[in-house]
Amino acid sequence: MKKDLRNTGQHVLVKGSMAFLVILLLSFLVCCESEEDYPDYNPPSDHTVSKDGVMHRSGLSDPTQNCTTCHGNDLTGGTSQVSCYECHGQEW
Image (cartoon, rainbow, N blue to C red; front, side, top):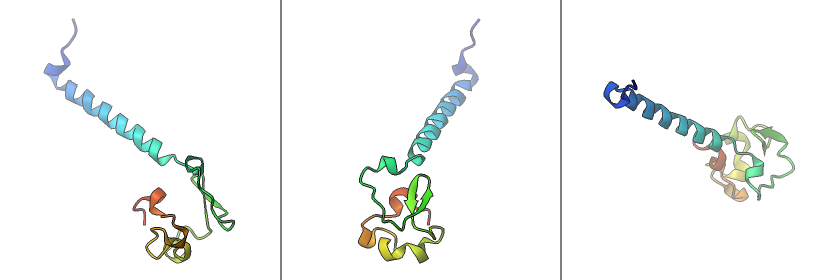
């Protein structure tokens, strides 16, 4: 005899678990981007440090000191017209 999940409250638990798995999968896909995902990505030659498959200039752990010359004081693009927030979100 099959048990009716709707009557036990497990139906809600199963739906919630499925939604969580879908969100987890989508998060993984978004976070796994690399320079291959950006066909126009052409960093300068001084960008020699690879982080998550994307080349950065050394000193990337302190972007407000090391990246503002090209990416602007607020890291939204500056003269390079490439915002750090395109890949890093609100990390800084």
